[in-house]
Amino acid sequence: MRLSPYAEVAVRAVREAAHVLMEYFARPPAPGEVRYKGPVNPVTEADHASEACIVSVLREAFPDHSVVAEEGRGARFEGAPCWYVDPLDGTTNFAHRLPWFGVSVALAQGETVQVGVVYHPVLDELFVAERGAGAWLWSGGRARRLRVSDTSRLQEALVATGTPPDIGTTGNNLPQIVTLLKLAEDVRQMGSAALNLCYVAAGRLDAFWEPDLNPWDVAAGALMVLEAGGVVTGMDGSPYTADTRSPLATNGVLHPQLLALLQAPRDEV
Image (cartoon, rainbow, N blue to C red):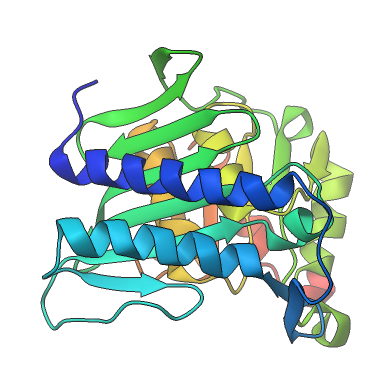
């Protein structure tokens, strides 16, 4: 796969940020390293250090581009291409030294995502997608093109989800999880939307949904699924855009059935 200059810079940014993250990950959390933006929404020094690294690389390469990053760095410029940056997707896992987290960077022009790069540093798996050029996994010095699964029966499908920070008070997504636990082969809740989406693209998962995410959580992984032959919409069935907050990503075959289940009234789920 021949990368565009945009993808090349994104790859460099996530690799440099991952090096920063792994230095933190290799040692126990220091006192005060983990803080909370909400009751169950941690942020660590590593989040900020990774974000500073990525934004610096992007700013140096593309000073006229917008950058929207989870921890607040960057700025929007009217009409400019926009980078969405999640410097540490899976912060809760990272804070507990659970080795399942990633770095996600995407470039959008308007509402259309053009480039997506997600890196899982612990496994050294680099996922890269460019609009019209496919989705690829770089691992062990080799690249292979990604394709979604061909699973057609929900009872044979392995699906994944996540829970929003307000689940303790709202119960948001719990009825859907219970329903899919009954109907699918199993439901995974692993703690990184970006990696879950990449796993759908790779055929390792058959579907992923999660309410109330942010563009930086979704953009890179959503493009990965689309370029791997899958389908991404909102959980309400609306077309996917860079601003979609509650995505459903599937191998395509399962999409209508999962949409119907996710849209069912709560007392019918």
